[in-house]
Length: 103
Length: 163
Image (cartoon, each protein chain N blue to C red):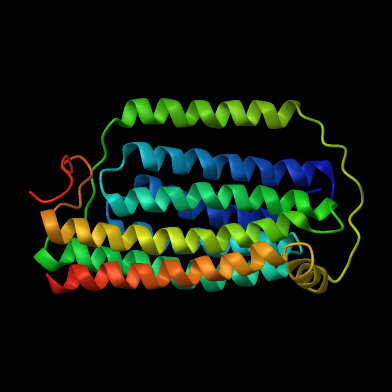
């Protein structure tokens, strides 16, 4: 793999990360924000996989698989918490969510 | 030289991400995320990281996207609301993310990485061996964390459903 191909993947990962940042910063719905977080985590995984091509021990891929599993944990817990918030206060819009606890 | 298959996978990811950026419908965004994730799995295949591609399709495209669709269904749809999401701070957010992309691109274009030729090796075997030797504690811990997180999520969601 030449350096040109490596930089192609790095540009792709940079685009994914900045698109995820935009989604997290601007969208109102909590589920949209979760989608943005997914994009940012995937950008990190693309970089790990691209660089681990040059590592005979493939440590980058091992870390990327751990990161994928942790992301699944994060999304399932976040959606369960969102569901609780929605049942309690009927809010799925992050701007309207301005109090926590029993109201 | 960048091959056609690499450009195709990149375009797949690009299309999915652009739909996520410009749609207002959350369900459309979830399916576009599926498209982008499958494109990233294709990128992993091109990078000869087959195990990572399989994990990506099974856990992300199979699990996370379905969880997100359930999330949409259980929150907005129960009251018959439209599954649209507005945006705010578009100007500041756009400036920040474009600036981030420009900064990262500048860093990538100025860096020199000194690549070396890639050996074709049995990746799955060496990843499996390193899971069970070098990273055994992390491997066991990640299994435990996954179990605890899924049981905890089911418990939280069950309490929400009972009320």
